[in-house]
Length: 321
Image (cartoon, rainbow, N blue to C red; front, side, top):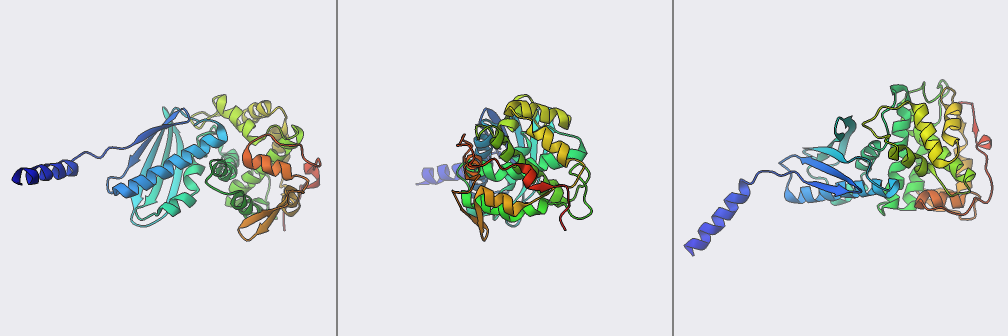
């Protein structure tokens, strides 16, 4: 009995003084090294690591692989719930993500979180001059829900409902200029996302729904255009357009870079067959661009659209009022 008690005590003491070991894992051809605060319980660590794995697999679902050979994830905890303060950087030997997580964050809250996937999407795109920050944030805003959808972590109704609800925040205000010149929160994040949505639709129309924005973005990433590299935006779009086989991004950038472009979003979502139902969407599969909406959702080539809806009929160089 005494021997058993001594052995039990030794096991407990050994566990208490075991050094905290940070996990790392491989995903999509890359390695993610995760640095965790030692005050997290084992249960909290398990929930957090499931969340990180889910976000990384979402990025792989959209891009085909993880963008960097090595990424460092620095997670700092605070007393409370939720995910805050995500920031992503390129460093000399890979990518670095810093993010804060509440120690009482629940598995359901982790499941609903968008921020980790958003930050990981930043790894896939080169650093561009500050006046073009809208494209970095716009891609992250646009791709994040689609990546989560393709990995099975969001529904189509949620993705398109949120897009239809929030996209108007990217429309230019009365005194706004083009995307390169107006750097408000709405124009940077949602103006950039609107640029991506328009580009995705137009690429699919011109390629008869065989290619989309992800082909352009994968082309950039696979040509070495990741966060550790500094690229001129014109070069980014040249590489992207070559991968997509059409010059949509260069043309759309010329149109939107220094002039305020307004988009008839109600008409656009109607053509896509997206009908808002609160924060989710219902779908009209007979809408003229319904096949394009489905291809954007799944990432698979689809049928050509029922009509060729020129962007000229949807956008104008007039700011919203």
